[in-house]
Length: 545
Image 1 (cartoon, rainbow, N blue to C red):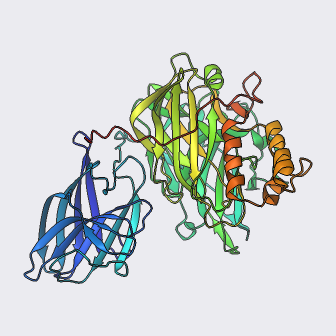
Image 2 (cartoon, rainbow, N blue to C red; image 1 turned 30 degrees about the vertical axis):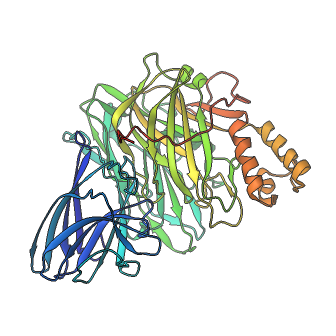
Image 3 (tube, helix red, strand yellow; image 1 turned 45 degrees about the vertical axis):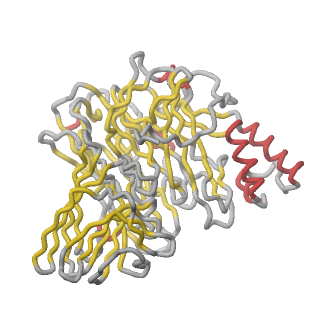
């Protein structure tokens, strides 16, 4: 939990009982106290703590508490830190307790599947009561994790090989996308399945590697591609490498290893499989440091023992484009990307696909992400959601229950952003200071559909800029670049609300793409956006009253 390794927390989720059992090992001097619990985004104030303390006789107690905005501790009327036991040997403390996911106390934190900011605070005792104790200036911190972690299937014996950036020289600028094309080893003349992958980050460069993807190059197995290594947008990058577009593996900050379910694996190799893959690494270098040389990448674990299904990845959400924008000074501004029924109808097999994993992704202002699932006009449970999302903890997560997505289903990926600390508009784009809204879903059996994302219609966006010029007297002009128009607007709460209403009701442009980058046949421009305004719906908690 802490930088010095004095506090170690372990836990076991009991899914049938909807509880979590915690075990805390702490190096804590006698009569000192420690609170361990949860907060929305890691803040001590507003946190919900199970608080261990010792009285003047050295007897241990645990109480359910919360921290007010001024740092004062308050003991809850309803006590929900259950099953408390402890043992102490000198300065070594071992304690266990149990916490229900949902306690039905409106003052308690609700433990949900997604990112949880586990918070701690500690200080000296002894105490005779907790009421009125102020903890604001005491030693405290937090860690992000997923308490309701789903364990993956145990993997059989496998081999691995690394896809690395190979001495990439990172330029002194904030954002760099580095691409490296390489041939796959000769062993992959025969078809294999990738059954697990994980990041392989050069230790001293952990702070600059933001996310990594490995792409399959959609070229003939006899084709020869240049082994390009350099900036992805470099003028020297050969045009033929643009065929490297199908995602094989992806990693982002905070993610651990990802294992496929025992019935599926990612196809790798074989007679019809291209000999080339491409690594893409997003480097974030805000201090503009010079002389960074990096060898990070992804480690792929593979087996020749093929599984029942070939797996695939589909990108949902918003296109990477400055057509989408977030005004400044917004506590919560929502952008949504659509995967419309017309696209799943042409892109998915008749019996649909089984989604078993999901990776939600934004940049620095994202605070909540959800993918809604709609069938025949009826909303089903969310495919995935993270109501306390952090861009610093972006796991590829196995779903607790696999989700069947059928042709004709709709998938709406929405992201909430907090721009209260930004002075001007935030645009969609690739830079770390730009924003994204993406859900990479992992599924089987593999389908032709690779990208199902949207952006606002070009024509409707021009209409919006003309409206904001005529009615709000803003210096927007459709002959100017989109980014210039957004930045020219003097943002007020009213204009932010107008933009929100515009996005909610505007026609959209769809990217309904195959793995070769081409769209499926059809008219994908100016499609109607008929979905209702997104709301976060509380699940049935079975709490009376």
